[in-house]
Structures are given as structure tokens and as C-alpha cells.
Amino acid sequence: MNQNATREQIVAALRAGHSVYRINKDLRADRARIRAIRDELGLATYVPREQTRTIEDKWRLYAKPLEDGHMEWTGERGRTSGTPLLSFKDKHHSAAAVAFRVRTGRDPEGYAIADCGMKHCVAPEHVEDEPGRTRNREQLRYVLGGRQRKDRCVHGHDQAEHGAYGPDGKAYCRECKRLAKQVAA
Ligand SMILES: [Zn+2]
Ligand SMILES: [Zn+2]
Image 1: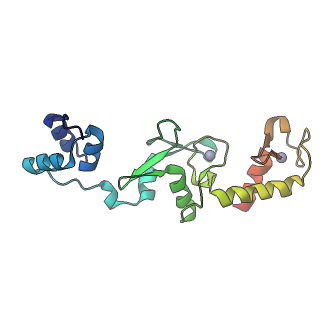
Image 2: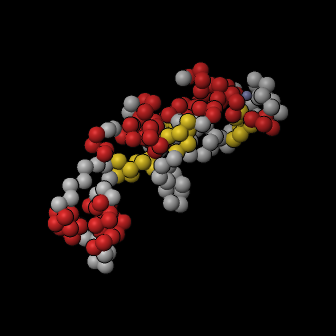
Image 3: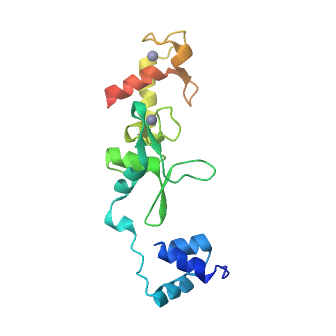
């Protein structure tokens, strides 16, 4: 552990209301040393705001509604992946997984990700877990009836605009998928 974080830095962080845990992470200063300084200055023990609200409440602070029902994440993101993250009680959660809980009241099975075409969308109505994605693919197979991709789908949507291929290589129509989801919702 780096003991070179200055006392001033630690005091400033404590006065800013940061937790010992966070200061330890940010400044790489020893926790016992941070606590000692805090107690010496008579500063209050950090009470996480999370204790007064649920993870879903905290999620709502960062989920910004956009047009077409999408939601943009204004909070923290994974450094390389850009994945929306929500820290709650000193743990990182996938914002999409919390969005899934907002809609369904349960944790996702497997990964929850947006299934609406907008990368990293966190709209509760747009995120699906693995069984949900499988269900959507089954609906697609039914809608398409196993046909090969043509200029227009069975419902007349232009495939130059709406055509796509699923992870299994099958052609599908994004517009039909959208409509099928509305029916299922
Ligand atoms: Zn979306
Ligand atoms: Zn279609």
C-alpha cells in the first residue's frame, strides 16, 4: 500500500464526504491511516446514501429517457467496454441488469443487454436476459416461417432497410421483431 498519499489529500477526500473504502481505492492509502485521520479530526463516519434508497432508485438517477423509448446511461461506464455500470453498496452492477429488474422485479438469467438496436440502451422495456432473447428468436422463426431472405419480408417491410441476421445466421426483419415484441409485451 502506498503511504505517500499526503495527509492533505486524505483530509480533503474525507471532507468531500468520501468513504474510507473509496479513499483507499482512489489514493491507495491505508484504511487504518484514513480512519485515524478521520477520528482525529472528529469527522463523521461516512453513511452511504445507498442505505437510504434501493438500487432501483439509484438507477433512476442516471437513466435518461430518449426518443423512441430508448434510455441513455449518464452514469459510470466500463473503461474499455463502455458498458453502463452502477455502483451500489461498494459493488459494481450492470445498469442493464438493474433495468431488467426494474421491469420484471427479478434478476436476469445470464447477461441482460439491450435488444433494441441501440448500443448500451438501458430502457427497462428494451433489455432482455438470455431466455428473453431466445424467446424473441423463436418468435422470429415463427414469423418468417423458415423462408430465405427476400426483398421484402412476409409483412412487406423492405429488407434493404429492415433486414438483419440473427446470431444463428438466420435472416430476420427488424421491424417484424419490433412488432412481435409489442404483441408479446
Ligand atoms: Zn433501446
Ligand atoms: Zn417485416
